[in-house]
Length: 111
Length: 110
Image 1: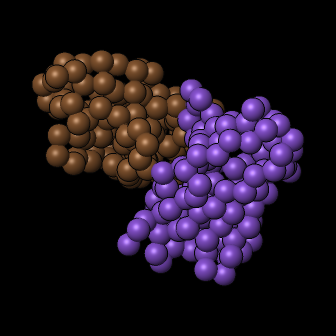
Image 2 (image 1 turned 90 degrees about the vertical axis):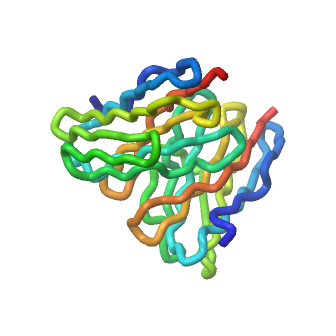
């Protein structure tokens, strides 16, 4: 079992661009949550997907959207990037409401 | 307390020293308290999940306690080793939302 995997590892974009980050959950998990960790902060909850629907959402603007596929993998999309979106984006998977397991994250730099 | 707060923000200890960190969290609507160990460039690794007031958990030289009435948890490391160097994150789970602290960065000097 590869655990939770995320791609890409690192990404550099410029302001105004759009980005898509990907996450494959741990085998047997059906729920994916996304977090943003800015420098010096703890991970902040963005949203959670279950059964291909957004189940919960944190305090993030509509520029942040996501998707979950039938195989439970997930994408995080961010439109109209600005400098403040530079952060580590973590994906976590779980079996419904059980304990979350984290991926290594994607480091996004917006120039 | 509305947020999850951790202290200290960082610390350096000598190999063999014992140390402890604090996690403070909102005591209302509490569901569970999670501790994670996070090494640079790796995934956060779950250490403990604690749910009951008075819970004590232990894994090797690392242990944790929980007080849900006053909203705090302590993580203890006995006889610190250089491989214990990492960021230790706590997260309060309220329903199915995890609220993280900013972590305690531990550096164990050989």
